[in-house]
Length: 412
Ligand SMILES: [Zn+2]
Image 1 (tube, rainbow, N blue to C red):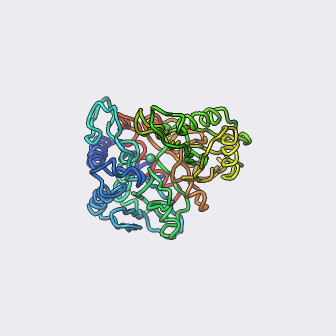
Image 2: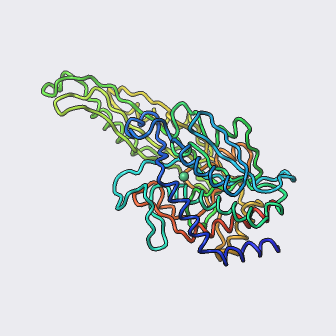
């Protein structure tokens, strides 16, 4: 209790200094274009030599940790895509709280009012690609680590706060090879007791305890090319696909409503076909994103898509599962949810509510490996993956304080 009071007092007295520090660190990291896309799209980003290039942010993290004299481990499945993990605390009681944030980002995309890679401070917000997802929160937990270390509180923590700057969160190649949390867990490099993943937004008002399964299906239509002036000699794959798309839009999933996750969802996100107006297109592809709830299986979803295909007369289609992962849900009655609720109420005056979401975070991978993991963190959930991404600076500071209090409480 005494230590919690000391930390709160420190944050109160040094808030301006902490603010400056978080802004500087976030700005430095946002400058680095650690864009992660699937291999197929790498060509659209000529400034990238390989996916992610997370080492560019990794170097900033390592420099920061060196400066505050905290040792770290570096794990990389391939050179240039490191995961950097440090432990604050004596690591004596076997209890470890993992706070992971990812260093990769999605592409900037269109529609920005300012340079996406130059942080702009406006109305108490930081604007730029990655300010929220996930470099701002990464700066916040690093600063929390610094405060604990500088105050000597690392010597008061019997367990360990594991601050982790990770690779490969934003894109998954069809080969399924993971360079971030999946790699670390598979290899057994880390064994956390709990994890809090600051990658959901919700302005620290909700705690993510369940996530839908994230799946991507590709369906290809096979037609026959011909000259555009003699369409009767060909088979138009785009028309064929259009008939299938109609069926898919009408499709009703077989499932049971989940008490936290609710209903599954389907998005037709991409459609590609045709090369010129005077050619009958020979192929057409669509990509569908389906978010599943517990009880839905890969075979079940494929057979429903196949039923749609069977309804298209003279159709010739192929289905390919591009990615599949299971939905997950944990009970809201556990010590990590309780601790988050307690300290949020104390610091922010908010009592966050457990909920389930359609997006995915590291929590899924961790829960599947029996680590009690939840999503909780700063920022507005509508600011992810959009132009003019932003995060509220005050929330980054408050989250750093909550991180310190959680560590002192759970790991003491
Ligand atoms: Zn993210």
